[in-house]
Image 1: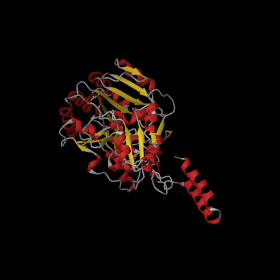
Image 2 (image 1 turned 90 degrees about the vertical axis):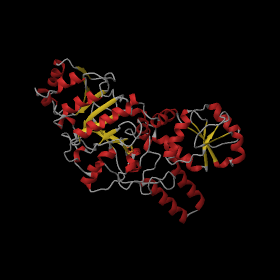
Image 3 (image 1 turned 120 degrees about the horizontal axis):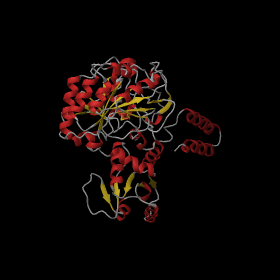
Image 4 (image 1 turned 180 degrees about the horizontal axis):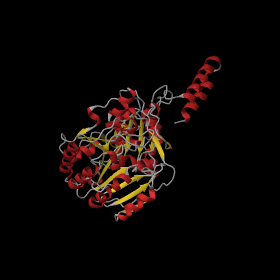
Length: 450
Ligand code: SF4
C-alpha cells in the first residue's frame, strides 16, 4: 500500500551514517536484517556483514562475525553498527563492547524496508494493464504520461498470450488485475478485454479504473453494455471522482438498477460486481479535493541509489506490457515523454523482465523487488501533491532541475540554493577574517540538514 513506503529522511540519515565509516555491520541476523542488507546492497550503501554472537554458520554472501572477531579484526573507530530489530539493551551491549558508532533504524523503516524488499506471493501479486495509453481527461503530471501520449490501444492478441503465460507461471493465482490507462473506456474492445481476463483468471479480483466520462455511453449501449459485463464477470469499477461536471446521480441509479453494489468507502478486497467511487487511490478514506502528484525526473539521471525504495509505485504498481513485467508504470510509458519533449531517458533491457524467458513466477516476484537502472531518473524525494488541474503539456510537469552539486549524500557536496549561498558567504569570510570560527559556523549550518 502507499502507506508502506520507507521514510526518505530516515534513509538519508542512514546513508550519511554508512558514508562516515569504512565498515558497516548489521546487528543480528533476523529477517529484518537480511532484508535491510538486501536493500543496502541495491542502494550501493557500505555493508560488510552481520555481527552476532548467536549464529553458528549460515549460507549468506555477507560475512557473519562475532563481537570478539569484530574487535580483533577491525579498528573500532572505523566501524559503524546498524541496529534494526534490537532493543535499548542491545545498544547498551554494543557500547559495552566498545563500539560507539551506532545507527538505530526507526520503527517505520524497520517495517517498511523489509515489506518493500519481500517478493510478493502469487495471491498478493497485482498487475496493471493499460487498455488505452491515451486519455480523455488530461491530468497534469500523469505518471502514465497519458496527456502527451499518442492514441494507442493494447494489442488484444498479445494480451491474451501474455495472460495465458502468467496463468501458467502462477498456477492461475494472481491476486489482482487492474485494467486501466490512460482511459480504458476509450478502448472499443473493453468488454472483450474484461471477458477474456475473467476467462483466463476465473478467481482473480479484477477491476477497471476510470475517470467516468464515458460511463453513461457504455451504460446505454445495449449490445456491449458495461454494467451487464460488470455483473456477469464480477468486475469492480474504480471510478475516480474528479472535479468535472458529470451526471453522478443518474449513473449511480443505472448502476443500482443492475443490482450492482455502490461503494463510497473502500469495499472488500475480493472478486465481486461493484462500483467504488473514490477521491484518491493513495488515501483510501480521503474525501475531498482531488490532487495530482508530481513525480519529477532528473533528465540526466543522478538520483542517489538509496532513494528509490520510498517510491510508492515500486513493487506495487507492477505493469504488464507486451510480454514484459515492469516494477512501475514510469518505465514502460516513458517513451511518450521522450517523444513529446525530445528527451532520451534510456530504458534498458534490465529495466523489465521477459515473462517468456523466466523459468518460474518467483523470478518475476524477485525482479519486482529490485532497483532498476531507470530509477536514477526519479527524484522520489521531491515528489509532492498539489490540487488537481488539467495538463498544460509543459515539461516542468514531469521534471525539475537537480541540485547544483548533484545528489551526493556528502553534506558538503549536497548543498543547494540557500546552502550554497551560505557556503559562499562562509568561504568569503574564511578569506577575509579569522578562519577557524567562520568555518565551524558554516559547517554547522550545512550539517544541520543531516
Ligand atoms: S523508475 Fe524506480 S523510482 Fe521511478 S517510478 Fe519506477 S520504481 Fe519508482
